[in-house]
Length: 204
Image (cartoon, rainbow, N blue to C red; front, side, top):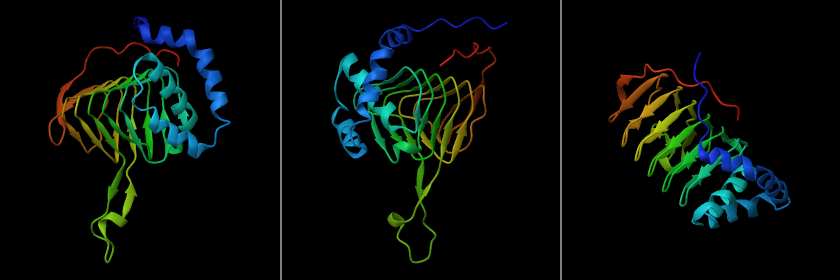
């Protein structure tokens, strides 16, 4: 039997303030969506726990789906269609990351380290008579549970990343990554298999 995972201090803090955050999300729904999106950019740099709480409330309002305990640090940049993005629970998005929301599916317990990027769109270069800047195609990114994306890594869709995965710093992932692996390099390749048992998933 897998051991029961210890609850992170951030999860405990979130549970304590969840009723207040839920009320704030409800009140924010009164504000027109286009204004909410503009305000979300304005609060990008708000420091401390207040900033984390504000950004969570706005993400919860704007995303197609967002779970619990999502910590968005200062200067995280979101582009694309928020309503097309799905976020799980217990996620940390660290400073200076770039996230393309189009077709994004992110599981539970995902860590996106400093200066990493998720890119879920591509420009076509082989359409007759069409400039590359005018030819854009969605390239969805799906990320499983218990994934650590290292600092400076680039996830370039369309790709699916499995569960229990480590992506090394500065790796460039442009192909699917199977579960229980560590990948690294440019382009990313399997460096090692993860053989330890992952604790049973906590309820979101």
